[in-house]
Image 1 (cartoon, rainbow, N blue to C red):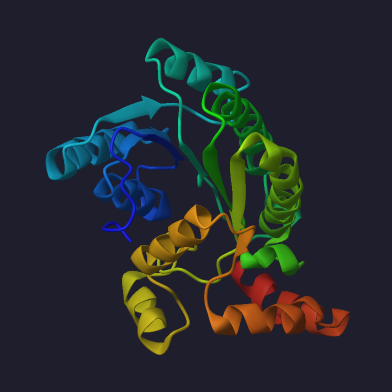
Image 2 (cartoon, rainbow, N blue to C red):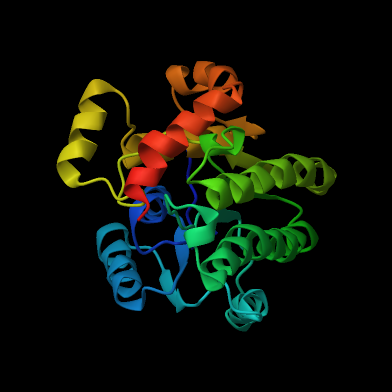
Length: 269
């Protein structure tokens, strides 16, 4: 893909760029010549990422230490873009959190974190950056990270799946609003990916990749970017994931209760 698309001189804003899939998005785009505007509250890791991209690919890389759940986070990001005269060509809304816990065991602060990070921050960034793309250049790409869990109202992941469902619905509607403005919006709904987000140890991640239950971050990112540049509305990785959605979403309540009693109640203590 990097041989077919030349992004030299363009800028990509990548949230959660300090680790995991966000780091892979930053790496893949830099390999295509794209300058990276990385955003994360993990400042040391983000600085290392920016230094690595500059040295390996010769691109410009900015590390913005920013808590996206702060009330003024979007305004701060937009001000830095304006100060540096940067109009993004790409926006990757990747930053996210995950817990396998009952809602009653999540603190009010953690619940607000899900809403602020997955809902409010993404919505505001899409609106502000999308309008900047449209007005300044009349073109651009936005990729929002939802999840296959948006079809899975399961015990233990209520906040995660609900906020990811919002991301999918918002992205599909916002896509239509932005299409006449030249800005394409794609939503990715991945199944399992071998990262540290879900708390799986490295040996189980490797096993999951070997048996095909998990995708590698590199493989997922490569295919997600390909769909984004083709202006696709949605990307779900893997044939098994795509075919399993209906079955999983249609699980009867007794099956969901079994998941609660045999899995959630044992792990969430």
